Length: 363
Image (cartoon, rainbow, N blue to C red):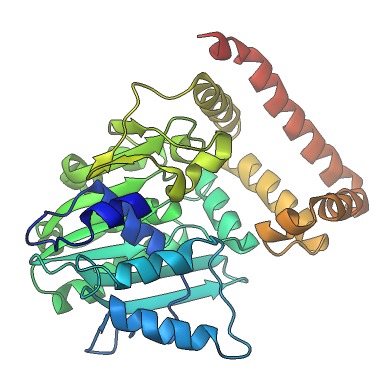
């Protein structure tokens, strides 16, 4: 990303058209703390990225300011955007950030004018909160999760206020929300959408892929996954995805900062890795062997155990994985015998599915 900014940052969008790398830059920007910096949907005004940087730096110097983004590069990213001709004068507006632990909602989005007669509506992916990941896993057994419905409402609220063409997109769950919102919004808005960017995002249940709304926009969906994708191979996508190279390995390839870029495009790979195909096939087999009720029971049980262990975010594990793992094991011992037996049995079924698909690693 930063190499791209150094190479392309002096050309605005009217000179060099919007491209896939611009898409992941804005998708990554969605993870940054923009509360009280970018105006909300009710505000008619926006804020340029260069001015947002100045406000952001002022807030960072204030006591008690908390940076909520889990990516250490994000502050450097917004500063690089603000100092570039390409991004500095882009107007950010319509920012929302809504987290509800009890309703299991983690949703954030903003809009940005790219000075080429278009606006990019960007949905944030899953943050480090446990409730954010819980909402993702709810896709296994729910036809619709709350954030998907909110995404449709957001797009339909913002679109009438936006001039010109629309792009929608996001990373991880944000890409899922972008596809869902584009497919379920009213037809008048749908016609204005030129591109739907889905960056290593979980998919949908199979019946959604055959819905009229999805089929109305599927030709405009651009799906990207890294070679060792796990999140982006989850559930059904219904359209071809493009595999790109990453400088990281395994699950760390999910991070957009690791995606390899050459000039104004990605560095593409011929196919995903054997390990990615193995994990994808194993998880799919495991999911298909359980009905919605069993999936829900397992996910709710695990969430209960993690909550009892006082695990609030993935950063809890990163900071002290040994003590966190110890608390999880202790809380697992504290649940009733039937729940404990069910969790262990379900995990064993996952291992057996892995055993049946181990030959995937050899091809």
